[in-house]
Length: 127
Image 1: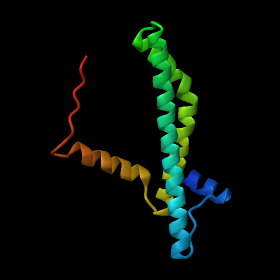
Image 2: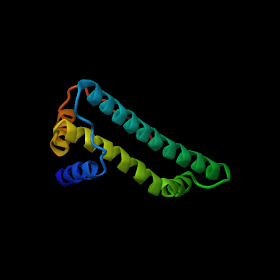
Image 3: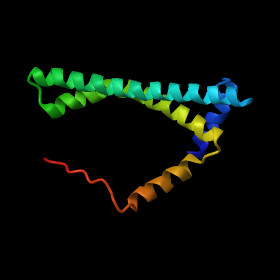
Image 4: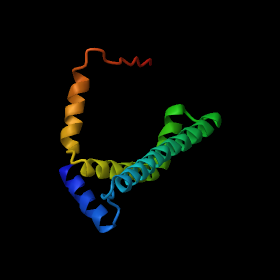
């Protein structure tokens, strides 16, 4: 993850896509703009999932087995979904780099925090 963040920092600098520093207003505007771009990319992930569910439902309505239908649908969105996830990761690393956050360290710390919570959400999977 450290290599990814370093690559991202250099890449964004070379492309002039860094979060702008300067006055408070300039920085605030840049942060908000990048936040909006991130949320747009997250919405594009939802759109890819919607496409997969719609395609799976079409196949199921045509008589295909649910598992097979969903596997085909997942495969059909894999490439585009990967692009959208990469876009999100680019914005996330941009924010992390701006605030000098080590994403790898933060990720593992957060997973440990969740693991040790007393009031964990429990999901029940019915088969």
